Length: 466
Image (cartoon, rainbow, N blue to C red; front, side, top):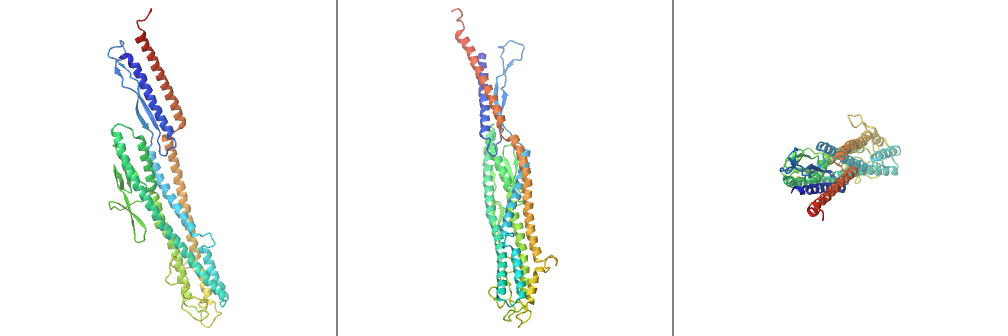
């Protein structure tokens, strides 16, 4: 009956504002939830109905039927999300590489008393001292000791670099496992989201979960996503799909001849275009660390070759000759060894001729190797090249840190833009709460008033005069 339409309108208002209050409560509850996008109750006027001729007027023959909550709107900025994810992968790439290079720099210990520079100076100094007094057995022992310490210094650094390089295998495998797990999660969320949308629902919280995973995939591997009309997102890495709809495609790991991890898609396709953390790990492992090892090897080779070339022609205290000071087979930083099996105190060679125990001519020549122009086409000494190695590493560490900082600043600026739109503002939610509460109270008061009016009509009509 038309007489009861007012109660219906009041009830609609109560229910709509109650639902809107629940949306506010949901926002407040998730104010600190990572990846949460604030939501808004979309209230709209209900479809009006025909008056059916029971109102005699010149107005439109329709009456409003109150308010209803049409949907729950989710705030998002797809364009900003895409830019943010671009900066996530760049920040992660440079931050990962900066941390790795800092580890390498620390392992080299170039500022300690055990640095290669210090060991080189001590080694050349021991030969200079011996050249001044070739017959002193203590000075001969010192040359042997300094040579062994120098070789050990090269060995330890090369070994640390190799260990750091191999350690990245574990980090890479862990990242790949994370990516594969997230691919499965994205596929499952695609299915749930499409099901909810197919029934006319709004899967806002599911979309938040999926966006958070997409952010993480961008950070680790630089993944890109493409939203479909049915609610699915297809995710790709380097031009190969990680997920298509509800189907995930996993990445597999293999080990090459050098015992280093390589990536491949489970369908056999080559993994291309590394980005994000994975790019930082692979670049640091296969380029920066390898460059440091190569530079150390060049130094070790020059030392071993040039010292042995002179020492093997010189004479010791026992008139013996032909002995290499360093093992001839160890021409890399890792394999460089003092020739302890052949070199004794008497066999430390200093003279250019036999029967001349006081001859220190060859010892002087060995000491002079430190100033020989052996590198860069005869323009740089061993010390200069070693300083270049140290300096280039320090510059690379600083460069990667600066790039990580620069991209991080842009990333945070974009994240601030996202939060301004999609983040929960508690002051705004408090205002909405008061607004919906007052509307709810007014609707309740309206229902009470209509109830009183109907009570008068139903229970008191015809009782006048009694």
